[in-house]
Length: 240
Ligand SMILES: Nc1nc2c(c(=O)[nH]1)N[C@H]1C(S)=C(S)[C@@H](COP(=O)(O)O)O[C@H]1N2
Ligand SMILES: [Mo]
Image (cartoon, rainbow, N blue to C red; front, top):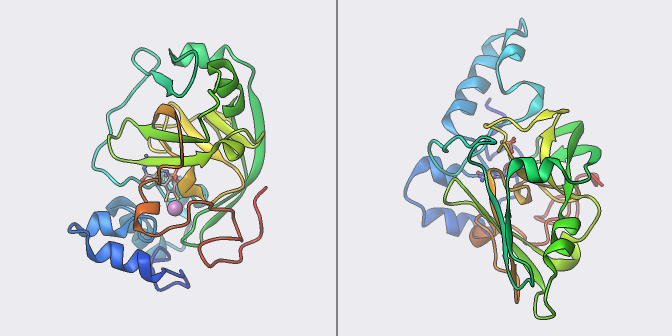
């Protein structure tokens, strides 16, 4: 059986199911409950392949690649930009080189997807989101942070307190290598203590907002405060 299947003990809440019924395309409805077609294909092969050859395929290491959209444009150091704006005193854009020039933090925690898969001890490295917020100068009316992505669809949010935690990174590296395109590179968010849907891939915008604006999956019923083991009806061991 495909271990991404929603029947595998995933507590899909009533609101999530109702949200999904409103979605037309099966590939989109699959969301964090099922993965995109390539993952199904690779998982299918993995079941037929007791030799472990599929470990050479790009979904090895326990990760599933997720995207709520079709192909995502590739961005490199030549054209990548991360914009910080909203309720800040000093809005600006960072190039990849700008981000690489800032102090880097490396964290190693388990990764936990809300569908159940977990990848132990995964290093992420990058700039603390707290540092970027401090540099931007958050105004008194700001209480939350909204994230947008250059896939043009995915969004996420954190409260300002969550965003300022020292285990929340704007990650340039994952598994001690530059974040690959499929994992959301060149820059993705990494929210260590929360389910992996909070870790927005292909990060392009950080906006300080007056209140939390729910993210893509949260609009279909997943928890906004997505602490691993304390949300979404799950009891996984904490990741941070
Ligand atoms: N832009 C974007 N970010 C995203 C997603 C997505 O579909 N699009 N999926 C989320 C979910 S549900 C998970 S589990 C992780 C998967 O990250 P991975 O593809 O690197 O394994 O990305 C999260 N961030
Ligand atoms: Mo996920």
